[in-house]
Length: 434
Length: 74
Image (cartoon, rainbow over all chains, first blue to last red; front, side, top):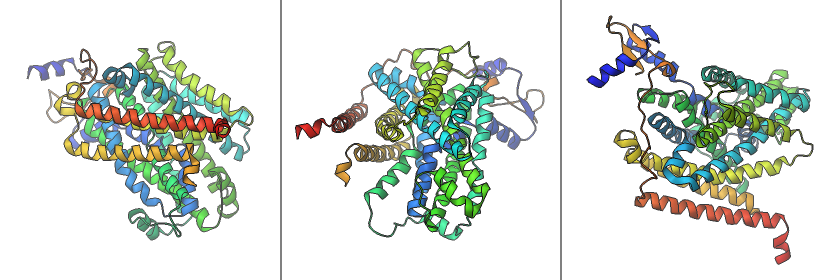
């Protein structure tokens, strides 16, 4: 009772008055909403667009079911992240350092920074490719994008950044318009989504690795670090957990639906015999049939995906590095109030943009390196997450995983370990699979 | 608190943005040190070390292969 009175007395006179209980719930949800949607939708980055469209282009609707399987997996993993962020008010990197010591902390942090930086290079390569398709020189598109991405974060307001990024996420609704444009057989789409089928012919290694690539692109290591830091940055309260869960569920559902729309676009190529190496090539190939809207839509959505991925991944790095170094690491701070944090973000974005502009840059090597190092960081980050969520000393009984959480999460971890190992083996020891 | 029932009129609810609200006392690891090595923590870290050793060995093999050194050995 005493505690409640103190809390009320300390609460600032701020906020909004509403009359109805449902208005209170809706408004509270809208205030909490953001990190869950952003972390999920930013994961539909340039690499994901390419993977999902390739899946549709090579196997039609046959791999659509993988997305339905991945939806609960994404949710359960990110729910743990949100819970840990709300309970501790700290980022994932800081928690690994504090509870597992410097060795594991250094390993997780530097692997994360490295794989994130390599991923940034692929994002800028996608921006360059997509805007080249619209006639913009990479020497203009890449530096302008890097500048825009920097200006997004240096305003000294987390909320401003969040609103911009949510608007970018909602632009992905255009994928549904594009999917509708190709008039898919919706009955076949629903059937393929809920009833797994195998493509004609035997199960090949390329099919297996495309499935693994879909898993790898849907659950990325930076997401664990990003959402926890984002929740801490937004100062979500204990009572916000149910809304953070809903935010995460909505984000996971939206992301899977957008990914499905990308597969439907690829499926259009599959049905019409259009072969393509990347989404930009596909966009050029369908223009004579579907018109400028389809081509420009795909190219601009590819840029949007890369921009979303870049800002989220760069922030994941900057937050993680800043909190471990003990620097000010907040978007609430001005540029001069958190110089190390902003320098990390700007250095990552600028260096990746610069590397993309180097002629004959070996992009394939970068993509392979991303897969290998993601295979190192994802299982370790997720196992630390699971152990932290079972850390009774740290979290008490209220916030730790329930037994059913643990059954699900250990199963997910076992599958991710196996898939990461398989993907890395295929990349590093290709002769084993030929 | 996410919402506070207004004290002067029970029909109203005050909804406060998390960024404007009073800070909460979070669960802190201060003074706890590193995590207690329960059997599950010990086993998990052992499995993780084993996994990283296998991945490291594969990476080393791949680098040596790319550098053409394995070809020379064979």
